[in-house]
Image (cartoon, rainbow, N blue to C red; front, side, top):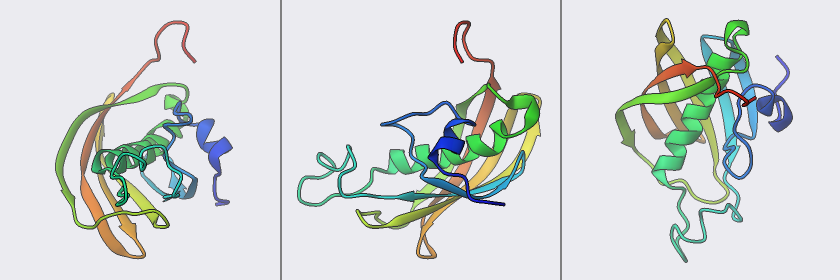
Length: 149
């Protein structure tokens, strides 16, 4: 598979700047597994205040990047195109390493179970092979609101 850049990612999931937290997708098995990357740049909007003089990527944004990774796996399936993937649960998340400007997060989501519109995925993010965060995300697939895209 040729890596997917931001334009191709935007064709799959509805997230946009400044909240699109994926730079590229490097592996994709629709409905099963995805691996994406996020380059943490020094000029990221959230680093100025988290924390001044000691910039660290917030854990909640790492979880959001993982959720977006999972959304690519779910929404790349033909039957789910154009839909939304919403959080239904966040379980057993553990943060193991600080993520700082210059780090490249490798984000992986392995879908474990999908029953109807609800599913679960095992997620993990690493920096140079070192575990940064791991957990299980539960999601629900929904139709966009009327008039949405």
